[in-house]
Length: 200
Image (cartoon, rainbow, N blue to C red; front, top):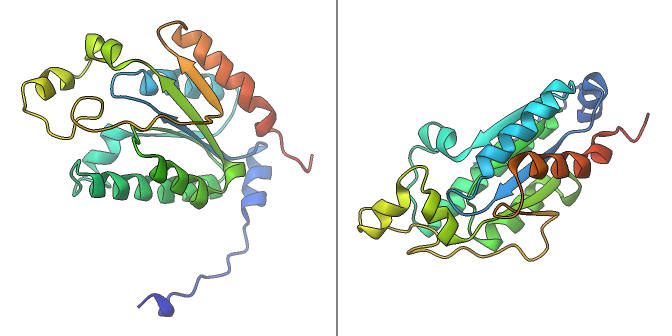
């Protein structure tokens, strides 16, 4: 019963962990169609942060689906639960003092709003990897679009399931006009002030 759950009062705070790491902690949420370049860009951003001594961790659709969320399908209800669990896991990692990078299609606005609610706005950076479905299908790095067109995959975002475009993302990357390196640098430039501890 939930009323019997009583949080323990631990002595090490998120501020203590951030001070120990010498940087702030928050979540970078990369959203966009499959094949848009989310994971590729997130990987380059993480490498640059890591080289700068920033403590990071990346959550990616494939590694989460194979482990934590291997019981979920791609139905709308399970997609919502998938994102909720990821947000809760990311929240714990932010509390641990990490900069978390999460690359997920996350097609529904209500689910992305729920992430903000769980993390709180100050700890959430929404990055929209804006790549047209035509370009994603042309790349088709995982062969998913081909399978969706053949009817082998149901609920494929952009083909047989909707993608609700972010209205006011913190950063929008147009991958058809911008290189991975340029996109990563723009993200780094945006988050650099956020990394600074306010009590320094």
